[in-house]
Length: 327
Image 1: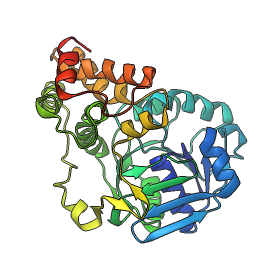
Image 2: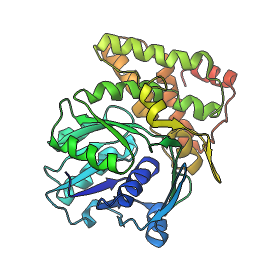
Image 3: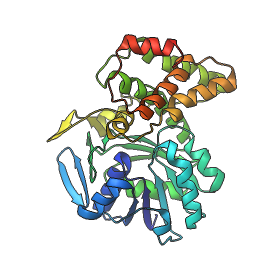
């Protein structure tokens, strides 16, 4: 059982996780930045979920170097994948060594990046429709649990760190499932995340048409060529109906869409499309499988973030044309 949990990246998923852990009695420290850091320091972190609205006095710092690291600490990485490299370097410089690092992030590249620097790395597949738009406030749109996490050691296996982390997260209201093949779950989640950039470009409620089908078909072809196993963790997963039924809105809070949509709405300046659709493009190039739609969408997502384009800026015809032109 971890003595303390450091949640690095207090955004949507990180904010819900940190607030829920704190409220359940777990010792937790958040690492945040910018307006979120200032807001949590000033007034605490507000968590809203079905039947729940509470503010917790979450301890937060701005950098791993401000943490007095302990041997029994555990780290949960919750920043976007494009920020993982800098975060890992900051952890190493702060003195982290053998403490377990759990990658609660979209995509499948974070664990490998962490394992390059640290020996004790674990993956978490996050099934949690969380929201962060207003500094100091996070929300989640499922009931009765706050979400579902699959977790396990990377590249495979289970150990006491997984069992201990699952226990504290379960106590915090997040349904956890330790598994020896967590990356099969994460590759399944990646398939779901490939439409994030499409929904960002077209609007969250838009029909993604043949582009939505194409991104998945390309990905599955790549997986087969690469010999990658994946699990279906979509809405057909029976655990969702039992443990994490979706709701459309909370009092005073509406769902606005994926993490990519939220990044664009906040003007974050970057999106994680390079680590989602870009992962499929990378695997396609490695294994000789064409992935023109995912490759084009990777470029389109980067341009939207760079230019401050708001969600829903494209019509389907405009996006088709952009994809046909290579992004």
